[in-house]
Length: 283
Image (cartoon, rainbow, N blue to C red):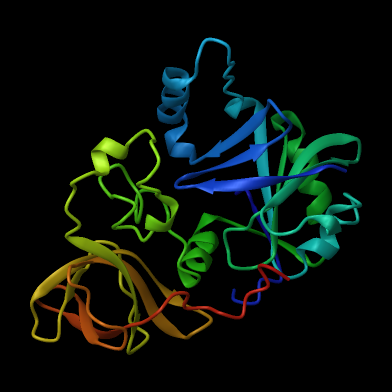
C-alpha cells in the first residue's frame, strides 16, 4: 500500500508540474526535469526518452531509488505541514523541495482522488520511516489502490490501461485540447488522417448496480454501441458509475442506455463529468 487517506469525504522555490497524457513533468530548474510515469510503463518511457534526446542531454532512470507516498484528503495539508512547514504555499499542480525529519523530499500537490492531496518523493530506503511518522497521526488511515480507483472514477480521471493506451488516440480520450495540429510533434503523423469512430463517455446507473470493465454498452434499442472501461459503486452518489467508449455519433447527455451483456442489462443515463463535484482538490 502506498496511499494514505486523511478523511476523504467521499470514502522554498516552487515550480510548475505539467500533466502530459500518461505522465507528469516537473521542472526542477533551468536544465533539470523530473518525469513521473505510470509504473507499468517505466521501461517503455525510458526507451522513448533515450531514443529522442540529443547527445548533449542526460537521462537517468531513478525509479528503483525513489519512493512515493500519497497523502490525500481534505485534511492532508493540516497533517503534512506539521512535518513539512511551508507546504501551505503549494498551489494546485506545483511542487517544492522540503525536508521531513531531516529527510530531503520533493513534495507535489497534484492528487488523483478529486480531493486536496500531496505526493511525497523520497529515497526508497527512507519511505518506511516517513510512512510510520505520518501514520502516528490519529486522523490518518492507510488505504490501497482500490480506494484510489473508486475516487478517481468518481471524478472521471482516466487511468492507463483503461481509458488510455497506445491504441486510444487523444481525440477519442477527450484530450484533444492538448494537441495543437499547427505545431510539429512526435506522433503527429500517426494522428493525421486517423478516423475517430468512438469517444469517451460517462454514465450513471439508474440503480445501485455497478458497471464493470468489459461490460457492453447498449443504446435504447438494445444495440451494442460501446464498452465500459472503468466502473464502480459510488459511495458519494450511492449509484453505479461508469466510464467507457461509445461509437460515434455520441448520444446526448441525458439519453438512456444500458450496460451488461445479452442476458443481463442494467439501465443507465449519460451524464457530464465529473460525477463527484464537492471535492477539496483546489481548496
